[in-house]
Length: 538
Image 1 (cartoon, rainbow, N blue to C red):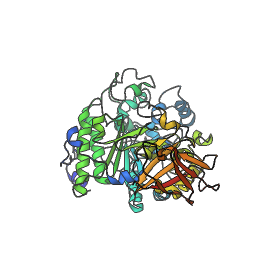
Image 2 (image 1 turned 180 degrees about the vertical axis):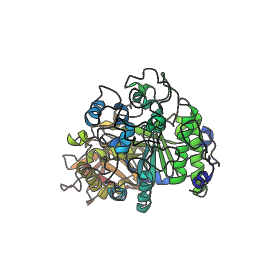
Image 3 (image 1 turned 120 degrees about the horizontal axis):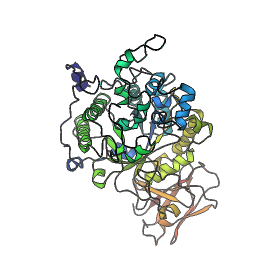
Image 4 (image 1 turned 45 degrees about the vertical axis):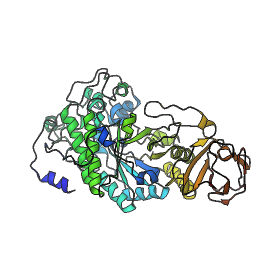
């Protein structure tokens, strides 16, 4: 906070990127230097290793139409479903564009304290808010981006209020930053209102009234004052240009500096415990590797200064090369590696569409509580955490079906949470058909949807106890876990006790072929039974 106050007290000048303060946020110096060799000293903090489960509010102005993810892009692509929806509900994007969606979004029923307390009661051990998306709209009091939620739309400090709720609830706060891609992501707007300038805002409307955005510069939102990328009219081209190749127009230095200043100010003013970047590795990867190195070193040094020399923060990125996994955390989108990972990692997924989509609600297409729990168990067995997005409606509430999913997650976690929190990997992550199968990921993930069955088992350990989760209730009362067989490579000595969480001790026999367990007819939960197993070899 002191650094921010000093920055704001300093004289502000104008730079080429609109009317942005030219005073740069300071880089925090310390033991971490902006090189991969130095950043490899980063260690995943214990709070994250123990947390295992977080909830994400992937919520911003694009949720206002309640018509799904990437609305701010595809509303500008004639022929797309979102373009057709936009024209039907709001008119031509040339007259009512993304800027107007931002203003129409009011978040009128948002209660961050109630939602954070709900997520904590369900079992989340950290919370993440969207800080900005590819729409380039900042959800905090951002001096480097006038298109923010304090000036426009809700006129509330979204990140600040989430942060206060997290502090009161005792949950670590994460923020996700996606703005680097706005440069190409919004190129479709050039055919509509994406080339408007601040001067256009001073021109009266046809009826003589003033424009609501008079005094604001649309180019600070759309950032389209540049030649468009090659193949820009191909709605799928941005996927092949994600790393700024294949004809992508390269962001200029002013824009890259602006994103740096915004993100550093977010760090210094709100002190998040975690930052999620929606990029291959780090923002501007493929055209400016130094950006990420500078940011990581400053963020880690800032954390170390605030925690007696020990950094306590996490930064995630996607599709990380091996040497980069030493310096930050690997995030997998909507997927799970098919083998245990040596280093800690995270899966991010959503129970529906990333941005709220009422069609998902109307057609009952949310992930079930059972699907979420089985993903969580699989992820944790492989040394990962699960970050689950619960889509938030435009008004700031979640719907009844989402609450039902959360109720189901809570019911299982209340009984079986000891097998999740604070656990570590065992000798093997699991056994059964899926443990033996190959399930390669597509790009940054996208291989979820495994058909788990009672034949699949997942293992973790904590304080001398091994937890074996059956990924479904078996039909027969007796179940055999092969990894505890006396001839198994994972044999850990004779089993001395077996306890079914939510029930109590159960009968067992430790045989050559495995551990034979007799399950009760009464089920303490309907999703997946968890056995706590003690052996002579800890």
